[in-house]
Length: 323
Image (cartoon, rainbow, N blue to C red; front, side, top):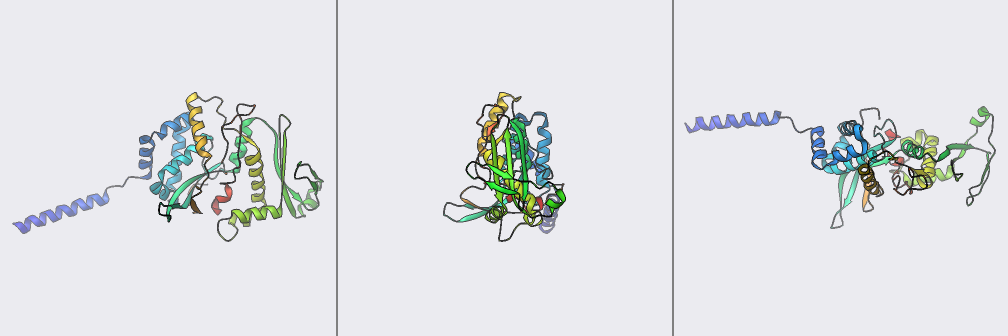
């Protein structure tokens, strides 16, 4: 009888195990929705985005579901994904990597422990794309002209680093000009109040910049295959991100949204990765087609804000397949 009873118990245990094995695990969607609700983040998205909040939250979940490294970041440091998404929402920029406005990128960071050792942890970081930076600049309404272009051999006659006076004799024949090597890139903007800014970077300066900011020993795929485009983006980020004016543009937002945006903008000023971390980029696998911006200090136009240097985190930090 005892043997029979033990057999029944064993069979029941096997059945319970089989049921447990077939019971669906909590999905990323379920866990993220739970986190958003439990910590009150969904309310912040509502304050920042209004009716567009559900669609934006859905895009975050879709992004994480499509990238195994972002899934690892969600398991190890979920708050970094939410914070990165909140920054994108603060700037009212889409996070679809295909659009190039803003990115949520997984990094394999080495976090410093109390004993001085380092422990690996996958974390997500917000990266502002150059298109996003251009969008924030346009929103201010204070720019009359913004442009970055290449300079061909023989066109640059003089450039005063102090006064930024520059003399360029453009070659008008486009066919002849295209045959000449690019020797540098010039960026320029003029505000409606007449203020102007010009920066020039030679090819040698851009090469030095790339070597300083590359991840690993060799030049990334983006630079190898589209060096000239990457150089132009670098000059644009320096022009607008370091010297320009950008705006989140919440002129029609509620006081609550303004307060939330202000708090989140302060968070966005923190460098990524932190100074006590050693970071290595981990390329994600986005299945869908797919630097630190404005402070909250207004200038004469209350919709605009001055911006610090954004080169701490830039598109140079993106995986090669996103460049």
